[in-house]
Image (cartoon, rainbow, N blue to C red; front, side):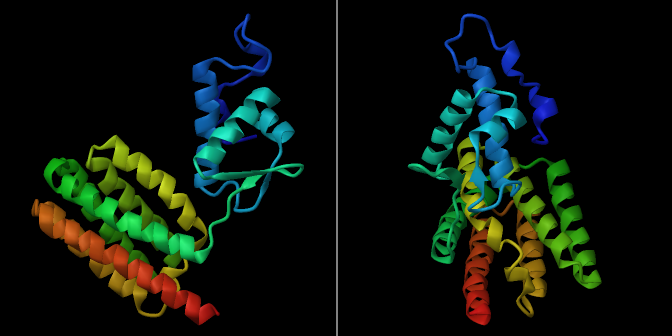
Length: 237
């Protein structure tokens, strides 16, 4: 059963009376859709993994027709592939798609950082600085997987503090393409120290309320991530 089942409290047997067979109330459908979408984008379901209607119906607590409608919507989101006679599976993004996604992220996160420099609260700025300090400790300890997780946390905090739901949603949809590559770049020799320095510079410019400077710093950082991902592909080839 999906982790968010307790939050959703979805039970097909309790769907409102009078609804057409297989339909859920809009709020119930939306909750189930968001739960499955989050499970895919967070990596609970891996690229190319099959998504069977029966199993998902049990996990989400909704009917199979409702699951079918959710899968169609997720296909429109670019997260699911539905093939005739084979059913649905989680979409897998190859390296060229990931690199193109990083170009989009560079623009959007640069804009988000610029907005955050203007709109972030003092508490948010302090939290960002604390995360970078933790990242430094993890680099010294050699815990690169935990470092990568804090890296993602810092980026989420910056985007959240930009207070623009459209940017936040766009970036959330783009990040899925990078899940399978998210740990690869920090493993490239020398990259962890460069990454830490780039994040410190981003937070420094945020604290200075330097809208233009932080946008450029964020774009530079993500362009380096893209270049490092290409480099890692060559090393592993």
